[in-house]
Image (cartoon, rainbow, N blue to C red; front, top):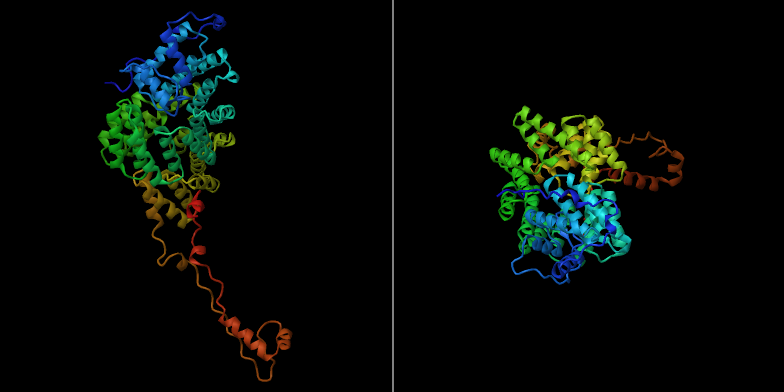
Amino acid sequence: MDAMPQQNPEPPPSTLPPEGATAVPPPPAPMRTTLRRAAFGAVAGAVLVAGAVVAVPDDANDASPPVPGPVARAEAAAAAGSPASLSDLTALIGDRQQWVETHPSDAPSWAVLGTAYVEWGRRSADAAYYTRAEQALQRSLAAQPGERGNTEAWVGLGALANARHDHLAAKKWGETVRARQPKNWAAYPVLIDAYNGLGEYEAAVRATEKFGSLRKGVPALGRTAEMYRNQGWREDALATAQEAADRATAPAEKAAALHRLGDLAWERGEPAEAVAQYGAALRTDRGHLASLAGRARALVALDRTDEALADYRTVTTKLPRPEYVLELGELYESLNLDGDARTQYTRLRELLAQGRTDGVDESVTEALFEADHGDPEAAVELMRTEWSALRRSSAVSDALGWALHRAGRSEEGLQYAERAVETGVRNASYAYHLGMIESALGQGGPARGDLEESLRTNPEFSPLAAPLAQEALDALGAPASGGPADMEPSAPEPAPEPEPSPGAPERSGTDGADEKDAGPGKAESREKAAKDEPGPKRSAQEAAPSPKAKPGAEAVAQ
């Protein structure tokens, strides 16, 4: 069975009627069909956000048959706020396409179709569907403006903006819906992704907590696990992600939860556990191609290179996301297969160019590629543009710092690399980049600490970069024995006081008049106090490089 449906959900040519067609009253439909579609339109404001068809209320009556078909399963996934399988998603798209053919003024159905296109484009890496999604969502708003209650289309536009990595626009749509309908939980996944993409992590935490209060169950558990992961709280992230996996029932929902466990295991430097979790996700849903990419990554760390290459070749054919193609190219380069690596890098450039044409911002992936394999100055310009547009996530900070370092401006790049690490997320690549920048600046102690952290976090985080991290660490050598205090020069001994000549007045300082006025007794006691007082000394904590503050550490300590 293919991981992708056998046919793409191509819309018929007349899916978007000509101008003015919305004024034509729709023909009557059978009562049962009309009620079913109306109920789902109310339930599903069908927002496919971050892999899930998201819906609004749960209390609508569902007249699903005892054995639901693919469309009914997709509707049930929408009502639960969970992802639909690709085959069910395809069926839902086909169903809505046929419906709007004869009901062109049905705003909820246009919104469902548009958000389904968003999800199909995201999960197939085919950005052409984003254009179709935008058309369908605009048709929904033309039939019923958002100000008149069509917030489903607004949420759909927010999901579309996030899929294109236009997080500022997504934030606008999500906050607009939240202002009008604070208890509409469908707005919060849009806001969570937007805030994380912009680096507004405190706002993302608040949105996640609100989502959890409005929407219990597996979707909320998954979002909470991701929040903990972003804060560096690994144990909490793992426990919450495991609970989500245990409670998930539908295959697509279960696969997504298992995939999350695989990601967490990989980031902890446990490739064998990651392979097991990704494999479980693929056995649950063979169409979950992101798990195939994750398994390939972990197989490389286990030196199962042939299996990794087979998985990478499959996933880059069926789900050609730029980051996967970059990973395959770097794997080839680490194996000294330079011709194969160049082929992948050429393909990557083509994908990035196509993405720009389709309005998708892949600038972080492009900057990392240019910094390491192309033009570092171009990488700097890409990330400068992101930064000036207020897209200041940890990923952007890391990429900008690394690009500046590769362009020969390590001192300028240091502040951005530090900012990426200080967000709290435990990312071996971020620590590696910071350590290499510090090493280039002659900051041996901090460099050693961050390079050790990168390899402690995940010893095999990259087939190219992990060996370089170890080489740089070896070149720095071991720290001085005895700890940081031994690295400080000892305080000089005070010079002995000259013996006074017979008959001369006593002097213990430079101001003889003061000493004379003080009297012999006071002068002697002051001289003794000066001899007994230790010279200025730095504590070990002061002598060592100051540790980086971790967000939330004070709250944890309290």
